[in-house]
Amino acid sequence: MPDTSTPPVAATAATGTGTDAGTGTGPGGGAGHGAVGALPSWEDLVTTALLGTDRRPPPATAPGREAPAHLLDTAAMATVRRRAGLRAGPAVRRPEPAPADPRPALPPAAARRLTLLLADRTGGPGGGRRGNAPDLMELLPQWLAAADAHGYAAPPQSLPALLDAARGRTDLRPAALAFAGPRGLWLARLNPDWRFARRTAPGGGTALPDPEDAEAVRQLWQEGLFAERVALLSRLRRSRTAALALELLTSTWATERAEDRLMFVDSLRTGLSARDEPFLEAALADRSRNVRAAAAELLSALPGSALGARMAVRAASCVAVDHTGATATIAVEPPLECDAGMERDGVPARPPAGRGERSWWLGRLVEATPLGTWPERLGGRTPRQIVELPVADGWQDELHAAWCRAAVRQWDAEWSRALLGAPSAPEAGGPGSVSLAERAKLLATLAPEERAAWVAGFIATHGLSEAFQLLGVCALPWPPELGRAVVDALNIARDAGSYPWSFSGVMGLAERCLDPAEATRLNALLAVPDEREGASPGAGGYWAEAFQRLVTTLRLRATMARELIPPDTGGSPGKG
Image (cartoon, rainbow, N blue to C red; front, side, top):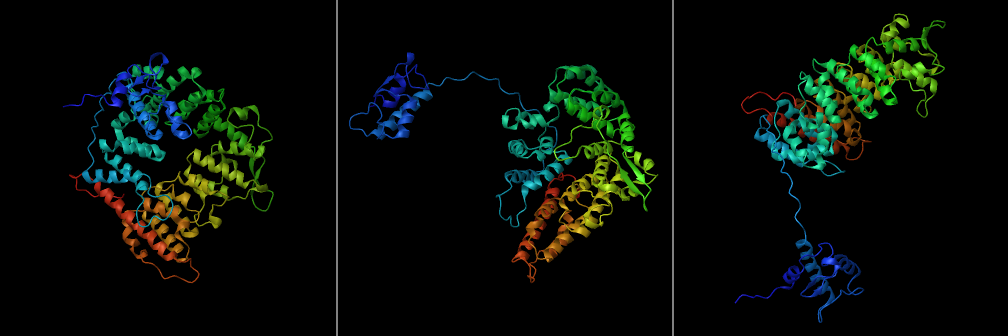
């Protein structure tokens, strides 16, 4: 015969209809009544549990029952009541279906490889030795770039892990979002943790109108979000309708916020030309100091600009050749003041802390002066001859540093070569006092082959102690000449008896940047060398382990490149 009695929990839930789920009290604040009497509030139960039933016995304990058991039973019943009292939330609109991605799917082997790379996105255990295992997370950017080059679509099931990886590393975002495609942006809109995707994607992931559709373009400019408007400007600047971008910007300029005006000016770097000069000249009078500085920088990079001519007149009055001594010398007389005209043209009157006013003003004038000014001003000399001239009164550092900034801003390879000097120059520098950071920027203005050759020569002369920053600007994979220079320098460091950890940065770059074809040549370095007198204890074994990891990584990169080849092509993977 079935038992028709009501269990205590069910009876409590049944008689507690109309209760407040948060407190367990009945309508009007009164206590609800169940099989065991009134239930205390949830807050009272929590307080009793924290203090202990010895210090605060639960109310209405049944005769013969232990207080802890009674407290747990009461909490269980209160839990049921709280859950039963929850009201269903309002129905929400179902999301639109994910858009189609017309790109081809990854080959199966490459899809499995992506799963492994994303599973290791934490980079493995922190600290300690890595052993022989490749760092898969450091190979992910290269894998994504190769997948994007092939035009593959990301597997739908990999999108959450891909977006999580991009969330943690900003350097992954451009390639990861390109690979994720429209489905990735669709998914990112459903999770606040992935909102970076909408900020990073051009126009926040919104489809931009055709540049030829002037009406749609103007509507988006007037009504669109800021990210959409910036993306629209950039797209127009890259199209045949570049003049329309400037027209739109001018039409709303007076009503834009200062931070928005700064971003809009910066977008003019794309396709910068003489037609932008009137607008940028007007921006020199903008009420925002940052906007004025950005406009001045763009004008100084624009060949033939009026600002460049004004700066040339000012800088030429400060720098000249002095022939009074036994040898020609560059004499420098920095400005005595920063007048209103200099300020309007982007020279800040107040220098940063620790900088002298006159040297600060001189540097700002020289870096904004067209480099073509100096051969005529300094006796018809070439850039290399100018850089080799001694500079009087200790002004060489300031003058050469300003010329470096000008060469980078104006993308002048001839001046960059002159300032870099020969890679075998003494003291690991050029003829002047060009810093390591400045050399890296100068190298970026050279063609990839010339850049790699210069760095290879630098390493062959000076070793790897200062090469990390320079290697970072070299194209991938490293050309054979540069790869051989790096491996030879690592071998020399090993023979010197030091530990490989001093070169861990360069070794990490080599794992990602060496041509995988170099793996065979590295086999000779895998053996543990005999420990030399004076060498660090156990250094040979650590070096063998580091070279083994390098070889393993190079072979893995070659395998990854093969896996990305479409099955029906049968072609070679090229260099990965």
